[in-house]
Length: 598
Image 1 (tube, helix red, strand yellow):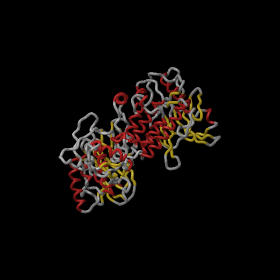
Image 2: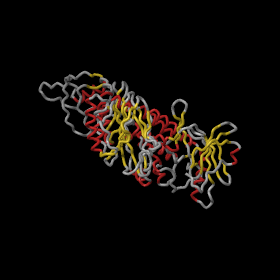
Image 3: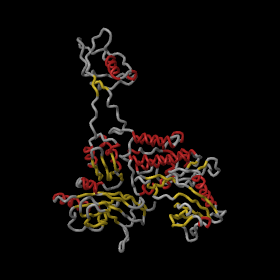
Image 4: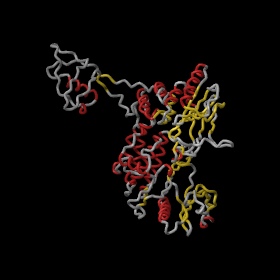
């Protein structure tokens, strides 16, 4: 926010005749963004106004140069997915940009709320982002600071979102003298290795940044995290974890897309934004079998009984006799001859020649009987119900898995090292990635005991509809409030919420209270006599558990704060009694990461 000695600049007098001031959209240390109306054509616009720096303030002069560069770069671009710039001007006191007013928030705000997009929407958003980059690159403009905070999302009128890329403030314009080798500019987590080293960058640095954005859309996480030095080391020396290992809903076909998008050498990345977009569309359209690999040809002809593997070239391998080969009259095994390369043959002919070559059939020899050639039977369909049961039973998790006729919907959380077991459960039930919707959040923390206790005693259908989300930017930092919203299932019940700290204590923040069916309620907002639940030490990973039951679980109120072990012991007894009495229980949990400062 501006200091008291740096007043916000007013709307410049050169603009007051043409534009009607409507309000303030935001402000910062250098200036302010106004909402205004163009009186001549009745168009709403945003006007960014900054103060002119003093001549001896080098840092401010560079910032002003970036401001001017933003106008120059965006001013030469007219694309539906790029925030339009209509005018630029300066006077003795300030400079300004008149630009398109975009309704909606940034992609970063969605990530901060841990909201996820379905795969078709991810493909659509990336197509727009890469389309805008292809357009700007063709006109010699490299953004150099592409990140979720610079990607605006506005409603497109059809229920979807339209991308608007903003802030070309550090853009590189071909033939411009404002770009200097050795100057590191940008946001570290989204900067390509050559950009982190301060080298000259080209359009492939933007494609790296777009790859980081795609990675976040697929997994909810950045591929390389930490401070500048940590990101520099990881981006230069380590490979990002394949998205499919972090998110069960990320198709494995995207793993190879990310390998190329985040290649260390620019020459190994996609050549153009259009090539990147084509690869994304292809990955999203590839069918997958239960193991995530491309589906095999189920119309292939197989030879029955040939179960032993073919020997590798140059390797002597003892081949057992197939069961369908009859012994010779003398009892000796048929002599083998050199095999015929299968690649040189096709279909039924290949199978026939293979049998002749391996079982000694030739001039002067009696043909040996072989089993008939049969067509392969199609694989059994996915077993969504079996996959749902296996996933819901995973230890140290609270996952709701709802099978349907054509897919499986997942929600909840599980310990991070359960991702492999979750994916194996899908593979064992032949469930392809494309048939899985929703998300399962991963966490690291000492909460297995409570999750295991709740997992076996929550009603599946009702538990799946008790949902909620945290408010604010995560991780929460010291002094911020823990706020959340819960949505009740289609039944009334008694709701209580407990907050578990990684230090081994629990706080019962919402005592049992009746809730009507289907309502949504916000918790944690300050009110008269209630300042809110303030984040403080110890910092780390906490857990918020919401329980909904037909009747209150505990006969007597629990202490406001108690040890986790005491609460778990009491909870185990309460759950057994509720189960015996037919008292339905639904549970959900939210991971709450906290830090001293972000």
